[in-house]
Image (cartoon, rainbow, N blue to C red; front, side, top):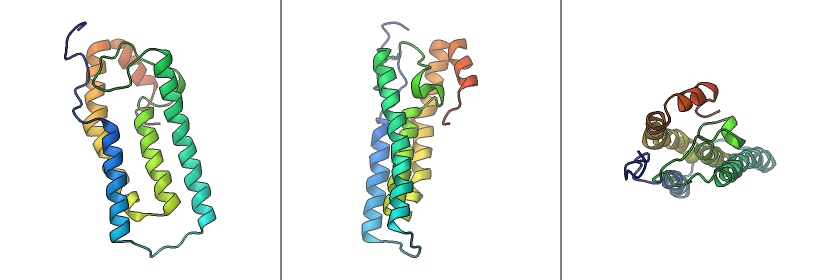
Length: 158
C-alpha cells in the first residue's frame, strides 16, 4: 500500500469533532433545559470529576508522547507506519478516544449534567462506528497478523 492515497482509515470527520459536538450539545441542553432533581455536594463532584479528568489526561498525554516518539501520525487521515504497543497503548487500543470519553464523563460529574451523561453513549457509538471500526479494519488489512495479535492481547477500550 506504500504510496497509495487510500493508505489510511477513511474517516471523513475528525473524531475530536464528535467529542465537541456531544459536549456542546449537552451544555446547550443543560443551559436551556436543566434537569436538577438530584443534588450532590460540590466537593464530591470536584473530587470524582477531577479524578476522571486526570485519568483522561494520563491516557491522552501518554498516547501523544508514544505516537510522537514512534513518529506515527496522530491524524486519522494519514497512513499508519507501525502498530504502537507501549504507553497507554498497553491498556487500550484506543487511548485517545478513551481519554475523550473519560473527559466528557469527568465534566458531566463536575457540573453534574444529566444531559452530558446522556451524551456519553452517543459519543461512544459515534467513536465506535465512525472511527474505531474503520481504523480496526484498516489496521488489520495493513498489518495482518501483527495487528490481530495485538488486538488479542489489548482490549479495545480498557
